[in-house]
Image (cartoon, rainbow, N blue to C red; front, side):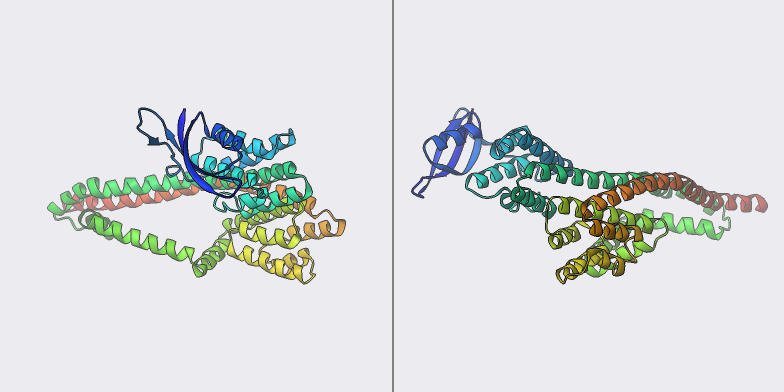
Length: 407
């Protein structure tokens, strides 16, 4: 049993505050509705001995993960297809969810729907949780009477995008872990191991070669000015991060990534796959072409691909074909296969289906390339580690030869 402090509105429009004990928020809603009033807001407290403890923990978990959004769309679509009313289906999902932020959002959405708002309109009030793609597809589903199908489509689209991101992150995880371990081991050696060895050489007055002097300088700097070195790198890293978030920084960074061997081709195919799948999902759900292209521009992260999509939206308004824009203005970014398949789709009236095939093609290609990248990275890392170890070995062994020669 929980204690609720709530505000409700009478049919006359008068808003009042009250307190009630109820098993859960659904029983509270039922009790208020039985009186003919409408719930405005409430706070839940654990009851007991007159001491009330606020058990709302939304501030601790205010983030909704991508997988939770995918499950929300998939489960809601399945319930609607099974014949459940929208409000009841949302209540079931709210009770099943373990994320306090999502539970709070769903409760608010239910309240908006009960007031007469459309589902898409209620979702649009939570842009940090539901992206424009999600809201537009829900709106199209409501307009066409195929909300369940639209939710399943958006769930599949979001899941494919999430899986693509996970594959890329997975391919980069191995080198990041190895490089981080190398840096940590190097720092520990500079602090604890190298000074002891170099002190021996210094005491014996051995002439140190260039490599050893470099190692000695780095070791002394880290040991004596470690905090300053850390602050310097934090400032440099923070400055680079701030610059990379600026429009000019994003433009330079994204253009540079496109010119890096192997990485550039992967970036092109990732953006082509994301553009294809998003456009396919929106067009299949009945979203207007201009709106679909504009929403896709917000989904694509690379600013140069986004600029092509923005230009395409403007050109389509003037009556130009979408494939023509991608073939001309996006020729250096989007592969030829992308625009050609789009052209075929426009000629046959099956643009959505064609783009879905393009998305699957590039997603499979990216998946294979990320696997190949992992295979290529391993020998490169071995060479880098070998070169680092060799440099330290030379720096330590050369003074020993000088010492032997002096004897």
